[in-house]
Length: 210
Image 1 (cartoon, one colour):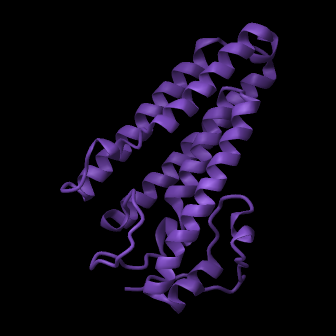
Image 2 (cartoon, rainbow, N blue to C red):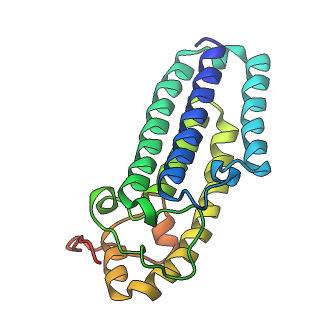
Image 3 (cartoon, one colour):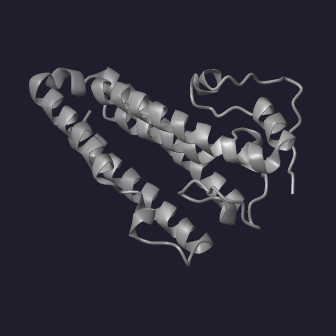
């Protein structure tokens, strides 16, 4: 595996991820879009730097590991996971369009409807699941074992708290329609539904509720 390939690919994925996210937010929420819509925070930048730091350190200390066939396999698998994850997120943004925002809505607005078809028939939070798998894919692509575990733990804890809060409001807005949907459709984030106390029915109906 060439030294630059994972780094350059990571940079391209970052530009695509944040560029398309910003564009879709601008398209559907033009009146509220701002620099923060890029989703680039100091904590996020720190996480990226940790990943790059681990990659450089391991390349210097154990170059054979980073240039091995195993690293090449990790690159292909990681790239696949990252692309699929980001695609999943963008499909969720497009399908839910004006109902998809970067902030948790705590008051129901007219554009808030319960969308359960399309990509939402496979995953009830494609934006969150897509980001989760995208960031793990980038770490795997760089063959960074420490960063992979750290990203998984930190992002899982973040989405556990966020989904718990968001679904509190969704249940209050849509009541039994949402609880039935939640029981039928997974989050696609490992072990998260179990931690939330959600069990999935095999016969759950997936439908769109207006």
